[in-house]
Image (cartoon, rainbow, N blue to C red):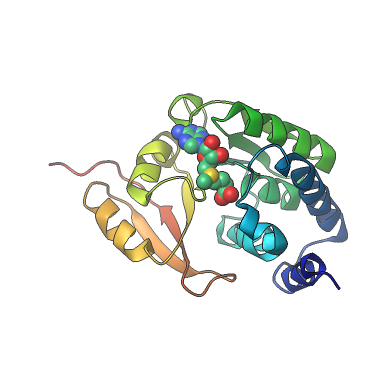
Length: 212
Ligand SMILES: C[S@@+](CC[C@H](N)C(=O)[O-])C[C@H]1O[C@@H](n2cnc3c(N)ncnc32)[C@H](O)[C@@H]1O
């Protein structure tokens, strides 16, 4: 068995989804493999462990989301993590919006969504511009920026009631402490299924900026 096949099998132990969802995820990875030759969608060193490192790592967010969200917005989606994995898992139930400032990556996201057979809205724009007039139950962002910047970027959605889901590495607690100096919200930290040092920061009951 190749390293990639063994990694997919390991991911099967972490993600409990339907056969149809696996087919959509296979279409995502096949498209990513094709585009990766010309567009740097994920770090090349992570290609052999793409199923655990990126797909399963993204999929675990769905369990932390309120049930049946009508709309999910992912900021800085890059190679589709977590946005397109979420779209595969919640297909037909949740409207997924992907915000990606890099035009080539946004084109990849559109093509991958087509190949997967999922309806998504791709905003080829910076998060600072794309969120005006949008509301959502969930906002996520992975490997985009420190938490304090993510909260500022996601503010238009958080302040109208969205739950924030932000995967973080070993620096999660320090980033959360720093962010709490400027913003009021309720936060919880959740262990990652794919990395013992990582945490997922879940933000709800957002109450805006602290008075100076
Ligand atoms: C390090 S990559 C992470 C991609 C993906 N979320 C992941 O976890 O693999 C960050 C992505 O965010 C995009 N990006 C950076 N700043 C952005 C902004 N202000 N608004 C939207 N996308 C942004 C970059 O083009 C890049 O694709």
